Image (cartoon, rainbow, N blue to C red; front, side, top):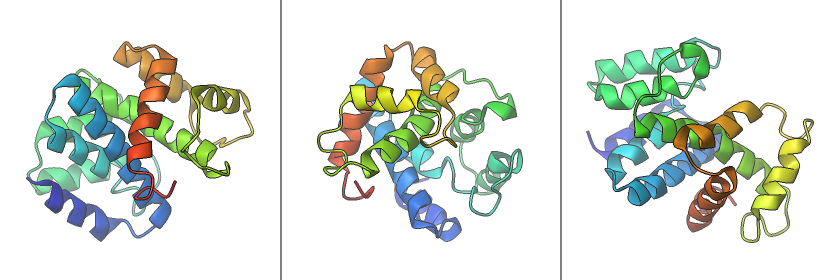
Length: 182
């Protein structure tokens, strides 16, 4: 299983450009955390890239991510990847017992929220600060589809101070700002 195979799989299922950019953003954050934690960067990138690949075809819980997990099993993806993807959706009740699974959960909604905050700014992500993200989190009307409990709980599950986690992800996303549209 290689990154390019995962990328082709994602592109075969996902046509929506915004969803692709979200998946690239989560991939980017996962790669950065893999480097930080001394983990397998390609494996972590694949998890970030594929975590929502079934969403366009199966947008309703629990089909997403259960249908995606079935597809990945048929394609003989490792259970480590499948379990991490299943665990990013709290309603699956799949325990996030690995650092990989906890990191995906911590990055998914946060990447979506950072994107929402950055996209309305003149310089997008270039000068985005943690304080701006935290201020927008308090505005329940802003990006209301993003689960704030998941955003907050993700950092806690990783055992990281919230501000440090947000700053780390912002910094990671800046590196790929053109690919993710920021």
